[in-house]
Image 1 (cartoon, rainbow, N blue to C red):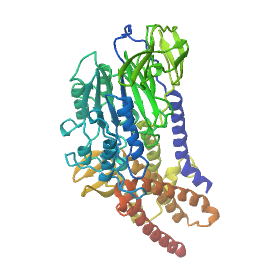
Image 2 (image 1 turned 90 degrees about the vertical axis):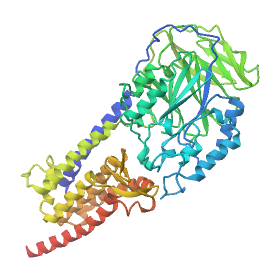
Image 3 (image 1 turned 120 degrees about the vertical axis):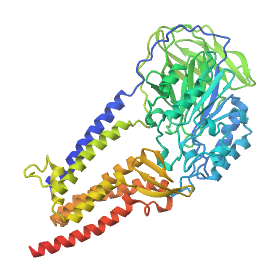
Image 4 (image 1 turned 90 degrees about the horizontal axis):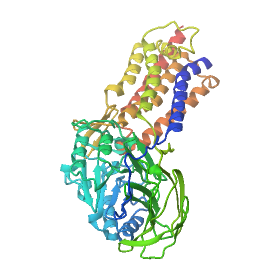
Length: 603
């Protein structure tokens, strides 16, 4: 048993150890790189007022969560206190599960969109300030985009002609949207990792090149951060990537959501731009204030139930949020206070000591406080604001900065999945080859474990080996399951989805195939070995029972979690790999076991 156990586990163990080492290496090296000095010399322009926007991400409006009242509150704050030119909603405004418990259907739910609209209207938020992009939850279960879809009826920012990219400009600030999603859109896990396509980058390039004014600051909004996007370096017809376009057009920030980090995240992408990811409103009730002041960016999450008047530092800003560090050591300290008071207490300490003074009102009850004669030393500086606003930061002046640790709540590279697949299928293919050819592996059971295991199943009947081979090959060439999208026949394949003959590529089909082979098919193999060996004493198979039970639970939990999103009530019945094939195998195994019993009696 121990030789068989080692044969069974050696390759997966090597795969697991390699993966852990790679993950540890990536974790230890995840940082911003060195942030370079600015190429020119920025002389601070006092006449240029700071700009700011409000970002709210991943609301997931649903009766299942306590979202409506907090959402009304945050919209009211944005309207009455913050008076922002833009209130950016960076995706997943609605949850779009038809029930609060599984199994639940992940498709457009009218009540969720109505509730989202109701919260907007109740807050009396100026509709002209709203800038929305769609998230994966907003897009579930849509065959094709038209004016009858809920995301089209309830979202004001775009239409069919400019779906992939659109923009607005106000008071020297331009916000450009990028929606890298296609139709048919799939369900649940189908849309978690979008695939960049050339036609999407073409539309984005067309939009971002409409305005070329150095006096206007530009930010880009998407729902999906870099690490959740596939085919990221896809080029437009003119040879530009998403990343190169942001660098070329001097985009100061790319703001996203989607991954629901507890705290805001920042990441420097290829030295081209800085990406910011907001906390989810569903998880933490609050919003983000993003400021731009003479090219410096600050990005700060504000709790909805903060006890003081809101305020945010606009200059200087933390070096870890910037594309470049400043050469100029004379940088005024400026802060926006969202209060009508001229007597707020903002005390500065650290590299500079003093007190900020009221300068002027930007808007009604939106004031600038400043300390104009601030001078910083070359190198790293620590700055603290206290009193009516508490904030600490590090600023590097006159030299390069970093690297900074940039941890991400989701930090899985697609090549990890390819590496896992290579290890696992190298192991599994050798077993299947062993079904059909006898190898001389005696004395080498541990090193040639997969062939040894396959040669045990080699002793079964021809039809048994044939069906076991078909069960292995099936998900590579045939659908994993059938389901419906807006009353159209849909199917899940290894390459993605097919809805009424239209193909939409997606990663989840690939994941479903891997999980089938890792859980269901490995149980088939182990049970087949036990049938041939005819050693069913508990003392000899307790380890098999433990492993197979674990794999069964793992596969069931995976399919219950994600199969329900796609197949709803019929996620077992309509699934080949997680239902129909396992049932067929049970009958096949019983038949082979009876055949072996008869053979042993004859012998």
